Length: 296
Image (cartoon, rainbow, N blue to C red; front, side, top):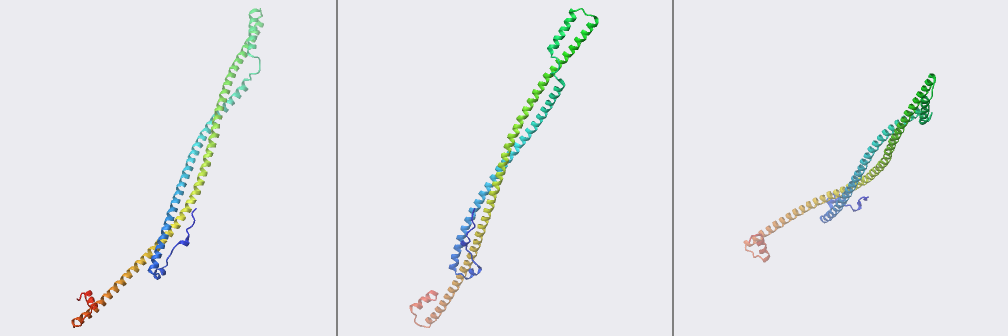
């Protein structure tokens, strides 16, 4: 960062010095003030340029931070959408898994005789009914047994069909759960990416603050140099004004001296001319004086 100006190089002038210094001293002082003013103006210009560069870099960092903010917000929006979809699918899968559990409890598929055994038993009973001579009571009991086994067979077949439905529901639930897992994976990936952009945003803002502090400090240095340059310019103008006053005074004094000299020469010439009229002989010097004043 820029250092403070070297005040030992500064030039100044008091009101007393303006009044007491000679014209030559004031001319020299004006040159010193002008040179130092120009140096300080150049320094102020350089610091203003450095300040502007830093402000531009600050804006770049702020823009960078804003881009990361927008990326983060967009990713967070996607995270929220995938979360909602994941939760929706998980809820749907849970409902189906609950339905599967309820069906398992209701079916109890592992208990009792299997279908082939029941069908074989029914065939045997029907064959007996058709081939044997039975009393009315025995035939009635046989028919009841056949009907009872047919009912069990129908119930078994119905439960078997329902068991097929159960597997289909279970497969559907697992497929939905798998789809929910994919959305969960996207949630994790997008959340990580959003966090990266968040961290980059924070870092960009931090760097922007640091550069802004440097820019503010450089602006203070610019103001310091510019104010010093302005003060030297004001003093330079004061000295120039004083020099003009002295020039005017000298011109006035020279004019008055010239008038006095001319008046004295005219008076002397008139005395010589009077002598000439009275018949005195004039030397060459007197004649030249008369010619200068126009009396001869």
